[in-house]
Image: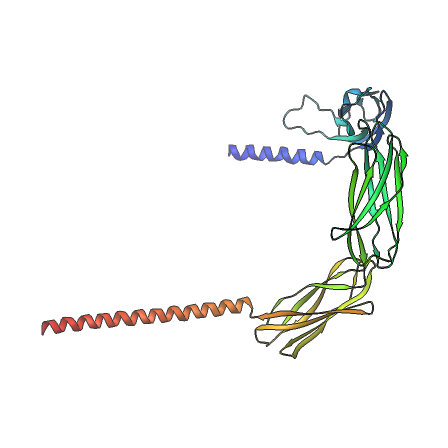
Amino acid sequence: MKKRGLFFIFLMIIMLNCFSVSAYLGMTPAKIRLDFEAGKKYFANFRAMGGRSEELEVYATGDFSEYVRFDRVNLTKDHRSFTAYIDLPEEASKPGPNVLYIKVREKVNESRRGIVTRLEVGAKIIIKVPYPGKYALIKTFEIRDVNEGEPTDIQLGVISLGYEDIYAIPEVLVYSDDELVDTFNLGGVHMKTNDEHLFTREIGGCYYKSGFYNSTALVDFGGKFKANRSTYLRVGTLHVDIIDWTKKVNNTGINKFFVEVESKWNNDLDNIYAEVNVSKDGNQVDFFKTPSIQLGRWKKEILEGFFNSDGLDVGYYKANITIFYNGESNSKIVDVEIVKPEGELFTVVIITTVVVLSLIAIIAITAFVVYILMKRSIKKSKKT
C-alpha cells in the first residue's frame, strides 16, 4: 500500500507539471542577422509574451555573449520589453556564422519544493564574421529544366565572405554521362566583403537531347581554392515510361492490377490512362482499362485497374500494357504469373502432409503386425 501511494503521488506530480508546461511563452523578434565589423556597436529591442510567472529573467549565451548587456534583466508582467546592447570586439576568433542567443526564462520561487518546471524561450542573432584573406561561396546555383528545343538559363549567386576584396570569375561546366558537352564563362565582377552578385546566362536548348545533364559551377576569386557547387539539368521529351506493374495475381476472382508510370516531360500531362490486354498462347483471357489521372512533370504515379483471373490455370501469361497520353502512346509486353491463393496452397500442403503421414503410419503398423505374426510362428515351430 505504501508503494502504491508513493507511485500515485509521483504520477500526480508529473501530470501537474505536464499541464503547467502547456502555458505559452514567446519572444519577438525570433531571428536577427548582423555583419561583423570590428568594434561595431549594435542594439536590438525584444519583447517577451505570455508565461505563467509574474517575473522573467533575461540572459545571453552562445557566441559573443560576453559582449552583451541589457537595459533590464528582470521583467515584470506589465513590462515585458527590453533592449540588448552588443559591443563587438576588435577581432573575432571564429570566422563564418556565429550564433548569439538572447533568452528569457521564468523565475523560480526558491520556496517551492519538489519537481519544478519553468518555461524558457530564445531568439537568435546570427553574426557573420569574415574569413581571413579572400573567401567566397556559391549561395545559389540553378539551371532551369526545359523540354527539347527550348532555351534555358543559368542563375549563379556568389557572396564574398573574406576580409579582402575579390574579383569573382565564374564558369559552368555541363556534362552528359561524364562527358563534357558545354562550358559557359559568366564574366567577372569586383566584390567587397559581404557583397552578393547574381550571374545569369541564357543557354540555347536546340542542340540538347532529352536526358539528365550534370552541371558544376566553379568560381575563381583569387583565393587558395575555387568555390564549387553542383546541380543538374533535365531536358524533357514527350514520353511516359512504364516502370513497374503487378507481377503476380490469384486465380480466384477479380484482382487489383497496378501500373507505375513516370513522366519524362517538363510539363503536366492530363488524362493519362492504361489499357491492359492479358493473353495465353495468343488467346485473350482478359482486357481492362484504368481510370485516367493527371501526371505532373517528371513525376511517378500509379494507375489502377482490375484483372478478372477467375478460373484461369496457374502459370505465366502475357500482359500488353499500353499507356495513352497527350495523343501519344507507349506499350510494353510483360509477364504476369497467376497463382493459387496462399490459403489454398496451405490447405493442399496440409492435406498432402496428412496423406503422407497416414501412409507412413499404415506401413509402420503393417510392418509391426507382420513382425509379431512372424515371431509367433517361429516360437510355434520351435515347440513342435
